[in-house]
Length: 195
Image (cartoon, rainbow, N blue to C red; front, side):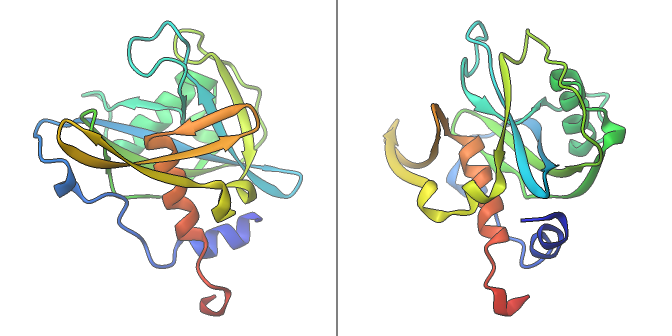
């Protein structure tokens, strides 16, 4: 999928990412992630990171650049861009924000706002070893294929929750990251006759 088709499909029929009523607890911690899309040889790729094993929260997990919305952040977009700059060296001026999705609430107590951005120019990754152990790209076309995205229901503290997961090569993408990818792909998989 190239940038022109992505832009057309992204702006049609927004989908609700997560029903907030599914998570009855209050006091969700607000966070934002950047869904960075980079054109590599005419095809859009997602940039993903892997968290270091020494982190207390979600060690080793695959994620998007992002984190907690700080008091000095103007909004979720500013937070996502700041975090991407800190974590992988992606300058906020090198990202064209094309939109956001509704917040995704997790059973671990976060309200995550996904911010979709297209990288304007290729850049050299500068990973913050305190936040990122590895960084890699995946063609968006891999994720768009429905057979690559999976979902299971699990029981936790007397409630059932849906957990998304996506195996990719030797990696395992799951949880909020996989749910956000699934949402993006459903948004982009609008039937061709609507376009």
